[in-house]
Length: 285
Length: 184
Image (tube, rainbow over all chains, first blue to last red):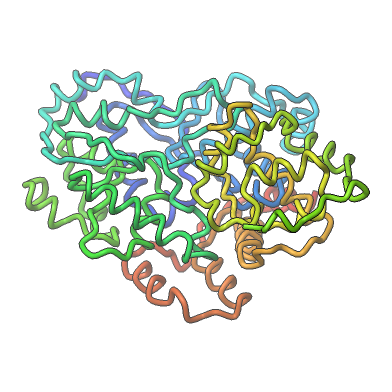
């Protein structure tokens, strides 16, 4: 592993990874370390505004995203893992690139001009550029014989303004195939989990989540692997089916494949306990 | 769903300025909507909406302001962009929903889903207070506001037990910068 030089990137964890999905945060930092990417947390970052800001106050949503962009040191990409944060930051950046009035506001608020060269990148984008096979060969990785349902959720979907970007669909299948996992074809890979409706309208979210969870079980999946911490929480919290399949963060599986031993604090944080499955597969003691 | 057969469209009620405003705010041209209903077919939550997304496009085309601002659709919509992606006329329907919510608030139209609005407000207050969302406080304040402390109690306990809810907030140091955003 030491053969590849480390790349430093700025990292925007966002509120979900910093609080409710710490296991996602820790495993992301760990698997990035294994592939030679050092995540340097953006100093004093603030909430991207999430769904609530753009739902009721687009100016606040824009300003919140802009403060984060303004904090990003030059010369390094700003890497995100939460699909929702990614969308908010990229959306603000798109507006800044295309609207002189937005750039003027940015300069006025944050006291410096907008850095048009700043690259906001989802972790998946970085992963595409890594020679994973070589790294895995070098690290003597663990083969994981699981069947999984890849779940991207909806936030990697893009509004028209951001259409030229990628939605990264297929990357989890492609990457995890190299680790021995088999992806299944199912109908819910990019279905919305219900996001914030989970608080005010659980009566809407529970049936949606159950459909997703049942879809995974019916496809023969041992587990769901998700790209989104928000989806992960909604599926775990709102599913009321018996014997639901465990749900892993993509970063957890990737770290396991690299043979990490730092996972003690991850799986005990899941509401649907994945440890019996991991043990059965010989992946943890 | 609304029984549209019993609703007459009165020409005097059409507010084309409203239509223009929403077009400007959303940055998308909903006048090209063909009523193909791809949006409503794809929307994961359309069964809970009084007007389906294609219906809302018709309302804004015609300038039926009070109907568009008072429908529950704009509050049920979570902005998942499934409709925007499926629209063959490239209308960013989710952006129209954003614009309509904001307009409804500006014009003090009563939200058909007050609990959803309450939740959004609590999230924004938390961001204003700490710069980040403090989930347990958001939930408690939301529950107090909606006078419903009972439902989801078990879920909350489970999340606490699994260390998914921090008792103390994660904070931005230079909070003044965040507060400035809310003062503007």
